[in-house]
Length: 401
Image (tube, one colour):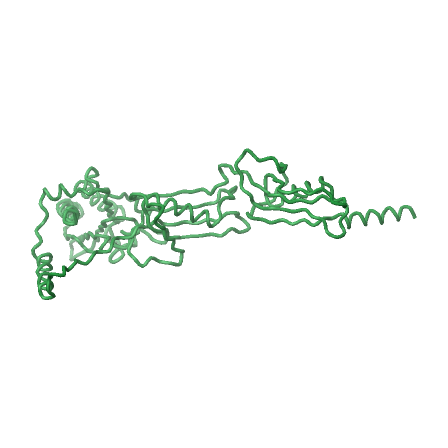
């Protein structure tokens, strides 16, 4: 009989001694079984931390056995359950006519170097930073800017495996901060991954873009009559179309750009008329000529093959770009000017056509064609004609000053 009585008492204590415990999770972190440090209400951690959740320990109607030890143990278990490092007690109430302690606590995670997302970036062009007073627009993966733009660079926001400071807000803030710093005007999200069972971190990629300035319409003064204005406009258009003199050497010298002008020569397209290594060689010849005509000391930069590949969208191949795609590709890789050669045949001869575009306007500003019996003589034609083509960039930069 005594034995039965003690068993019943034990069962009653077990059922009635369970307080109400609540846990709120602010970060999705894995559970662990490591030691948890407890800070009382007067203590503060010296190490930087982030609150990742909270917990409370309270009596219900039947609770009568809940000591301070049980409450602290409950806080520690909650901390381990949501992946915290320590508990900061925010409130502790002693028994008030009962035998039950009650309280609340914040669950914290100490911030270390690998607590932040891994950030990798590639910047190909920079402008003066954008002031904090100017907003940076963010376009989602499904949105496209309506205005023409150039890509200044990109950033990847990745999980380190121990990252927990990487929610969507922090990711967007990281993109915006870098965009502002390099003079970009908008962030174009190219990829985004939400946390799942294998990750505790938002991950994503974004391009930093700057919009091309829209050409301004010429102002008509109020003193001009409509007829006079129209006549003047017509004469002006005729002059621009037919009689604009080429820039003089002095004008070109004065027109050294105040910022770096990026020139890209895309891979030569031949559709198997010549071998791939021959395509690459002819492209390199064009880049060599461009580098000689447009030197770095004059604020021109001829983009390397590696620069171009790094800036191409993931779904684009450098060999795919030809025709109308040339200008679009030039904008994607942030080039101010873009050129490409195409190899073909005419009878028994090998032909080459090279086009040079201004990416801001999409205009074809220069081109040349040549034909030859073999590649050696075709190379000579390129070295002879390409300098004049690339010099048109200097002329255009001079006339735009």
